[in-house]
Length: 279
Image (cartoon, rainbow, N blue to C red):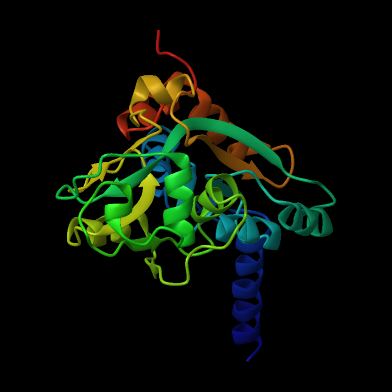
């Protein structure tokens, strides 16, 4: 019985170390837990895989769930790095402060454009910001109102935990409510799949996504690299990594690597814009 209790105590201790200290001393492997933005999920997983190839003493686990989920996990101590496609808000800062007595640190890691997705059969290819606001708020409900078919518009949204949902609501809708008639899909992939099968649907997601959809111009400006790089495209944004405070150890080394030419090369390969021109 004493042996069983000792093993039980050891198991509990190891789990505690994993959750609170980010490393397991018995194996000598540091564990970095990353969670958040689905827009950044494939990018972060590619970063992690390539980093681990040359850093055998580090294991990186990456999950999606949305920017809000990542920042909530960071404040709860169940993530070491949050992926976010938007800036942290006041309530999230408060949660970080309550746990860590710090307000969090953000790192710009890439530039992105939030693209408006249309079905390729839709004759509409350019929308103004005003039209976009009226469509997503439900004031424009038929495509003929913006030069398209006489068909009802189907608005497709991400869930409220998504940074993209938050970005459109704050930047396009000026914090007004979305239409109550919208369809909600859990991921960018599911949004694009839905729109690719429904000619009357409209949604949004990262510029890097290319699954049988059409990227609408906004105010006559295409969502292409040169327009995003110089902020000519209206829905240009940065992508972020967040830590509770100043990172140290393997977490700092990983973020430094993400910002290095090696990490920024992957940003470009994944269809996003690196922070600076490659030399």
